[in-house]
Length: 602
Image (cartoon, rainbow, N blue to C red):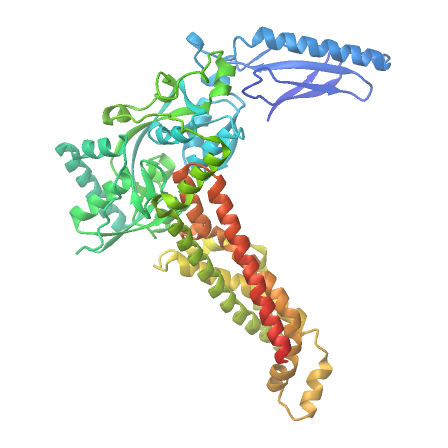
């Protein structure tokens, strides 16, 4: 929503005109009805960047003494008629260029999508005035949001949109609107090893560029047809290189048949094979990939990275691997409403100039079909196709099982360790040692007051930034500590509720304090803290969904990877939600059995 400055009506009253542009309403309006029945209506239209704003206003003022409802209704009707007439008059020129082509001026104030950590924000703000930004984890999420009308446009590379448009034929690249964004390359940690890898990579790129191999690799990945997974070298006499990849932008980098595929992973694998390195890789989002490189946990970053001035300050970049441009992606119906041309009627398989806007690299390496709608045989056929793509194609159900195993392992290990630590912290509190109790209180305050995703990133990228601890164990450590704080509070509230007379009676019978606690106090308190630990464990299970931020491929992250390949959200998200619900239900049954057995034993 964009805000216009305060203005005064002819009688000196002040008001604030708020305008919310929309693709289907190029002349939006906002009506203000004062308490004294004064009415002012204005129609505002954004102008070009040069003229800043062009306004066409229709005003009707109702004097404060005209309070009869008939006059109000009559004047409101007049205003609405003027608004309708003004929209009809001005709709023929919605910020278009020559021959009905859209210009960047027509995008002013619209809702723009941008990927977190990417340079989309930079190029959108450079070319579009006052956009309202909505942030996403991948271009796949942007395409879904645009298809559902949650945003109005986003910038994308023609090579990746070529695949997206097959699943979203209602989207298209705006003809004549493209922005050169420069060259992409690989990034390296700003260390001595990173500098050495950068120099070796530049030598490798120069060699394959001169031999023509680089052009062959481009032609292979940027042409239509099925592709093989990248062959990952597993042994090397010069050690192992760790690659961080977002794997959500086909054909640059993506997951296929449980393995890594794409233009950039192929180049890295060939580089490692040539220079005697073994290759390992982790998958994360764009922000996580940049943090991996900056902290030195990964050696090479590949995610269509552009070498901006800010990025050059914190990491090294290789020479160019490809020159890219951004195209503006919009819905066909919105583009039709803005330009007056019937883009919805154009054939998705031919004659659609909007989906052929691209870069020189794409033209030279063979273009893909930019949009091809899939035949849908009704709702059942569509659901069946979505199910097959989500679970059966490329055996993606194995990815879901793998992610589920990771989620369960983190949950179980963290719950067990956290429960043990929680009991230990409770015992420290019982002894009322001033120093230890003070430190424990500070520790509990910090952990309970900090979001777990922030704790994860601090632990992974800062505390263990230079230590080669896998993200899985960092997640276990972080969630264990976080769980221990909750468990300690549970023990303190439930065990402390047991009557002190139980301990005194046990002592009178000759038991030690430790024996009294173990044989009398703890069994009685267990009836109360087991249900509370059940709730904490289920919350822990759901909380592990954020471990993808530190390159751990859990259940949620696997769902994201599948969505980036199927280009739809329905089945992947529904499956992930159903699995979490099932596991939470089984967890509740497990704790209920423990409670019943404990009660019977007691």
